[in-house]
Image 1 (spheres, rainbow, N blue to C red):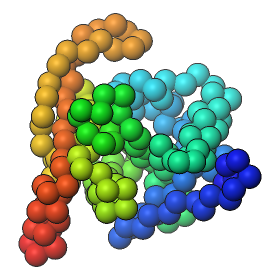
Image 2 (image 1 turned 45 degrees about the horizontal axis):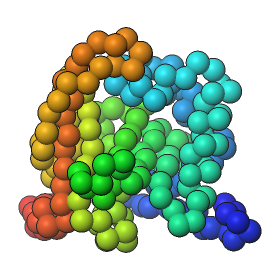
Image 3 (image 1 turned 60 degrees about the vertical axis):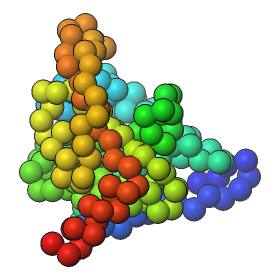
Length: 196
C-alpha cells in the first residue's frame, strides 16, 4: 500500500488457524459472496450490495481507509488455508464515549460453527489493546443475531446497553445490543484462557 508516496506495510495478524490481513482487490469475490447470503445480509445491512461492481468498490474503499496515515480504520480479510472466508473491521467510533474502537464482522455461512470468528476477534482485540493501546472496545448486533452476541461473549465482552433501531432497508424496529470490554477485563480473561 502507498499513502502520500510512503509505502505502508500490509497488516497481518496470525492466530492459531487464521491470518487476518489487509484487504486486497481480489477480495471483492469474498465480499460479493457475503453480499449474496441472506443469512449474512439480514443483520449486516452494509453488505446489501447489488452487483460485483459494488463489491469491488466496497473493497477499494476499505483499501483506501487502510492506506490513510495516520491509520484510522482496519479492514481485514480472514484467511484460512489460503482462502478468504470472512471480514473483520474496526475503527474509531463516531461517539467516542463508548470506547476507543468499534468493530463489525461477517463470515461465510459455510465457515460458521467452527470458532473462526471468535478466534479472529480475539486476535483483533489483542492487537487493539496491545499495539493500539485501546482502553475499551465495543461491538453491536441485533438481539436476534444470537451467534454474533455469542462470539462477543466468548472473548470476554459483556452486555452494556440495549436499544431499539430501525432496519436500514425494511424500516422494521428491532432491538440491538452493545457489548464492551475494557483492557483490564481483557487482560483478566486472557489470564483465565491461558491457565484454564
